[in-house]
Each structure stands twice: as C-alpha cells, then as structure tokens.
View 1 (cartoon, one colour):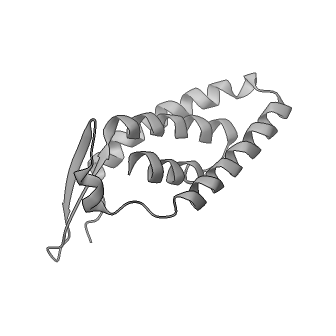
View 2: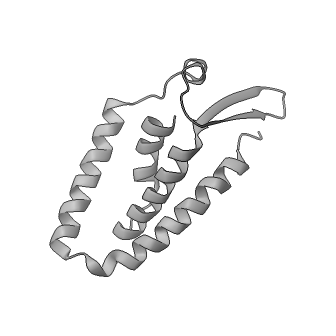
Length: 123
C-alpha cells in the first residue's frame, strides 16, 4: 500500500520520546489528588475536542489556506495513486513532545491524546 510517511513519523517520534522521558521524571512531583483531577480533565477535554472536530478539513482546502511553516508531503501507492498532504512541522513537533509528556505522566497510550490534538492543530 505504501501509505506510511516514515520521515514524518520519525520526526514526530523523536519529540514524543523526549517528552515521555521528561514526563516519567516528573511523576514523583504530583500528588494523587492533583493527578486524579488532571487525568479527569484531560479525558473530558479530549472527548470534547473529538465531538467538536470529528473530521479534518479537506486536504485541498487545507493546503491552500496554509500560514506559517508547513511541510508538504507526497506519497505514491503501488498502484500509482498519489496522496498530497501537509502539516505544520513546528506544531507537530511541539504537540508530539506534549503528548509524550502527558502520556508518560499519566501512564496512558498516546493515541487518546494524540489523535484529537493532531486533528485540530496540525491538520
């Protein structure tokens, strides 16, 4: 299928790993009460974001309205189908660090935090 953008994945993974290390180091500084409250707020916020933004904008519309530093990527499948997409690299790296930190701090899988954030802020 060849639909995986390894270059983008590696760029974002490096930031996520650094955030995860930082989050793991900070777990001892948070009380159980604060942890429980923050975890509840995080889960509710992620759910609200998914309800408010259930679908990303169309690719053509999104690419035409870009501001700032965006990385445009082209992927070609085995059958020749071409996919063009772009994303804000700075926002992606920053959010990846944040997701790594939060996921490690709360001991949850990053997808619960990553998907809503990437859908809304990175496109």
